[in-house]
Amino acid sequence: MPAARLASFVTRIALGGAVLVGASVAARAGEGSVEALKTLYRIALSAEMCGFPIAPRQSEAIGRAMNRALAESGLDAEASDKLYLDVDATLEAEGWDKICAADGDFAHGWRALVAANTK
Image (cartoon, one colour):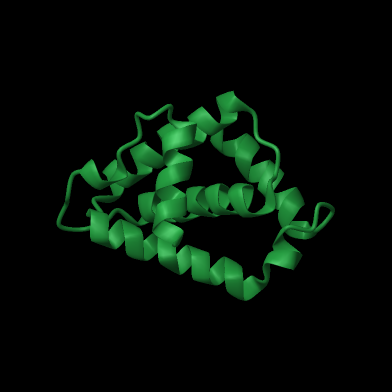
């Protein structure tokens, strides 16, 4: 179940402090924050599914960025779950074998995304 994978990942990376379902609800989701959240979901899902190496400090930074983007987006828990499922479906459609290829374009891009989101 994808939502359970996200919850498990967030719990691990934020040392039990990330509580996505408790995020505040806003009338409109901020476009930039939603895009940032999609990117962070892609990072989290692919790290888990592909076993890409990620340092604990990077995981914690991703968790903090995810919480921040979720709060800024104004998405409620249901909309956040839908966004997560959409990202999961997109990655699956791209093909996990292609995404998880260690020397593939996605893996190289993933490393750059992690670096950009963990400064």
